[in-house]
Image 1 (spheres, helix red, strand yellow):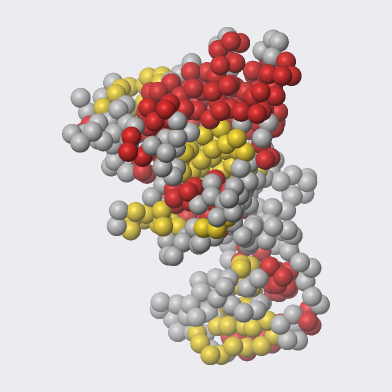
Image 2: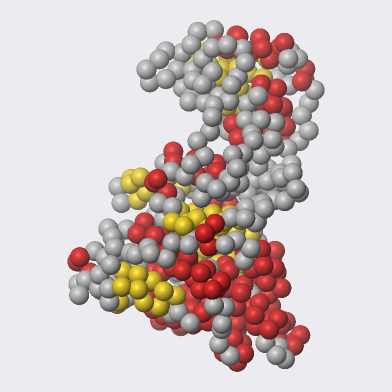
Amino acid sequence: MLKWFAAVLALLIFGAAGAGYLYYRQLNDNIKKDPLNLGDSKVAAPTPNAAGQTPLNILLIGSDARDSEENQQLGGARETFGSTPLADVQMLVHLSADRSNMSVISMPRDTLVHIPQCTDPDDGTVYPASNGRTMANQSLGHGGPGCTVATWQELTGVHIDHFVMVDFAGVVSMADAVGGVPVCVDANIHSRDSQGHGSGLKLPEGTHPVKGEQALQWLRTRYGFEDGSDLARAKAQHMYMNSLARQLRENATLSSPNNLRRLAEKATEALTVDPGLDTVKKLYDLSAELRKVKPERITMTTMPNRYVGARVEPTEDAEKLFRLVREDIALDGRDAKPVRDGEKKASAEPSDVPADEPADDAGIAVQVRNGTRTDTLAAAPGRTATVAGVLREKGFTQASADTTSALSEERTVVRYPSADLEGDARRVAEALGIPADAVERSTDVSGVTLVVGADWREGTEYAAPEEDDSVPESAQALNGADDKACMHVNPAFTW
C-alpha cells in the first residue's frame, strides 16, 4: 500500500504535463503531519552494515476514522461518527538494508499489548501507560499515530523510521488508479449476517478485480472469511497487497492526467504521515526504494499469537519473528546466514541515540545471577561464583555473585535498567561472547546484571547457541509472487 500511494503521487507530479509548482505545493499542503513517536522511550536506529546501508522500517496504519461525511458513508456505524479513531490495520513494513527484500508483519487489531505513556502534541494531554494490557488498536486514541509507533517499538524492539496512516476515503479514492486488484475466493461470498454485520462484500467464486469501494470491502471483510476472526482479515489484506504490488510492477498504466490529479488530491487529503514523509517528493523517494524489491522477495506474515478469551496475545514465535526483523534477516530464507560473532546489531533498547561509551572494565559493576534452572533440572550449583570469577579475570573487578535466588532463563542475558548503562551492559556481553540481541533493558534490575541461562550450565566459556532463522509456521508467511492464493469462504456466508 505504501508503494501504491507513493507511485500514484509520483506519477502525477513528475509525469503529468503542466502540474506546476503551485499545484505541487497544494498537494503538499493537503498531507497531514504528526510527530513520529509520542512515547517517552526510544529505540536506537540499527547499525549500518559493512556497505554503510541501513534497513528502513515503516508502520502502515489504517484508521477507522469516521470524521467526515465520506468516511461515515464508507465506514458505516453512524453511532461512532466523530468518535476517537482506532488503528484497525497495523502493518510493519521492513525494507532490508541492501534493498533486496521486504518483510511485512501484521498485528491483529485485537492484540493485547502494553500501551506506553504518550503525550498529545496538540494540547499536551498526557495519556498514562495502560494499566495492564489493552487492545492495540486503542493506541491511536492516545494522542495520534505516534503512540501507535511507540507501542510497536516497545513490543518489538524494532526502530521505526516512518509511519503512513490512511482512512477509508483514501483507500477508495486510490483503488481505481491501478484499474482493479485481482483477488480470489474459493466460493461465492456475501459478507453480511442476519444482524447486519459484515463489510457487504459480494463476489462469485474465482478470481476477480476489485477497485473503489469494493476494494475497501475486501480489506475490511472479517465475516465470511475462514473463522470470521481478525486473523483471517489480515490474511486477505496480505493477498490484496501482494496482488497490488504485482499489478504496479507488471502494468504501470494509470488513467488520464485529469483523473490522476483528482486521485492525488483525494489521496493527499486522506494521508497522515510523520515529518520525514511530509511532501510528495519524499513519498516519491520512498517509492523508489520500495520498487527495488521484486515480488518474489516480499514476505507477508501475521504476528504469531494465541487466543486469550476473545482477544489474542503475542507468542514466543512472535518474538522470534521480531528478532529476524531486528537483525535484518530475510523472511524468505534466501539470505546468506548472518555472522553474529563480533557483529554489531540493531539495539532493541529504548534509546534515541547510540549507547553511551562504556566505562573502563574495572569500573563496571556487574551482578551475576543463576538462571540455569529448567522445568526438569535444578539450578546448576556454583554458576554465579564461577562466572563472576571469569569476569574478574577479564578485568571486571567489581563483578559479584548474587546467590539469593535461582532463576529460570532459557538463554544467557545481560540486563540493564537505564540508557546510561547500556554501553556497560554491551561491553560485558562482548567480553563473554554473548550476542548483542541478548542485551536488554529491564526495570527488574537495578544495575548491569548477567543472568547465566540454561544454555551455560557448565564451563567458563560461553558458546552462543545456533540461532534458528526460519520463519515460524504460525506466522502464515505468504510470498509476494504467489498468484494462486485464494481466501476460504465460510459456508455460512456463501450464496
